[in-house]
Image 1: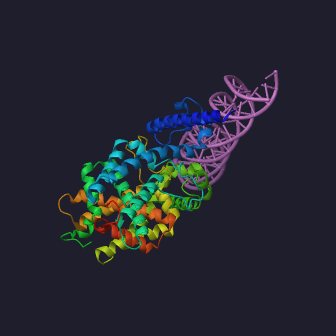
Image 2 (image 1 turned 180 degrees about the horizontal axis):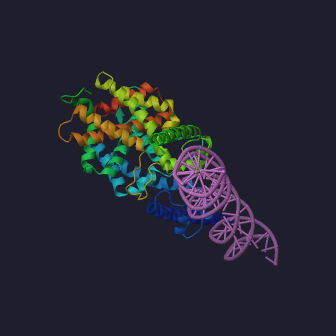
Image 3 (image 1 turned 90 degrees about the vertical axis):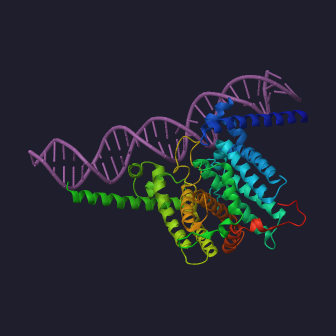
Length: 213
Length: 213
DNA sequence: CCTGCTTGTTACTTGCGGTAACCGCAGTGT
DNA sequence: ACACTGCGGTTACCGCAAGTAACAAGCAGG
């Protein structure tokens, strides 16, 4: 068996893997994250053991699947963060891009946020990650951008990471709630969140008769 | 069978229920949220069907379990929000109370955030909630408090809810990340988050050589 | 022709959530 | 005294999903 053939086979295997991932994608988008391996294999026109040969276990498949979508989302967010405009507008553009993405494909979002516990499988339970890997990645990426573009004085590294994860969490939780209840327009939500980040909470006055805040 | 006996039995059933919940608590805290019903039943000294008679299904048991812990956490957070002090100090006290709670009992926290998909079981998948019920409740409670204590002008209702969920999400994501990596002291984290809420992101200058933010 | 490697299959094991059907024992009406 | 009924409890089962062995065919190369 020659080297060129090895390469051919390797490439064929990668193509196969892509096909399988696309089939898995269809099933997950149709049936949700609890789609069975049997169903995915059937959609791909094959049977379970092949899936296992390619991805090890369900967690492996879901990780591979999640990576594709996460990469895509990260690209659009980076683009939004790089639009040439004032800081507030960039922040709003990024929030809006995220919300538009989860609004357009809630099933993808749902999958990314909730890989049925399969994708983050570790067994020690105390040190396990709780949030979806997507959130961690977004948080870290945002932290990097904040750290390199902002002048935060001493401790900037630490501060940037806290803010990165904090802002991402804010965006996520608000978006999740909004997606479920649709209490207002997307642009309204974006404006409200930007207001929050711009310190309106600190600046607001106490309510007339209230106990103060 | 007399009325008094009915009451006795009802009370006995409630006591039983409490015992079962405590046993379930022990198991979940030991084995994590994916503890099996068999294991929980064994810990309680009985067998599965009794559990099902009391709680319907796993989701019911986990909901009951989660409610206890959520109520307790909410009480401590409310207390922190009611300390008589300046607004910034209250916010910091509340953040600190939350972080102290998840730091002290990470397993409880893990369970509340991740009830193995069991506690939020609905099948339509598109309209399903994604976040843990705990986060929703915290967000709504905070929204109420913000709405009643702050003067936010028109749209205050909507604004308060967005902020409630947003702030809770920020707290959660930052806390989750911090709990996993322990990059700094708790007080530091609290200060950084409060800084973020106080508008330091908007106020910070661009980095010296960077492309601006 | 046989050997080895990849690709695919069928058929199994294990473990879980959930349930049906049965068991024994209190108290009760007659 | 005795059958009857309600209730806490159990065993034994179903269905289903993850994951795995073991085997079957196509196809290189000596």
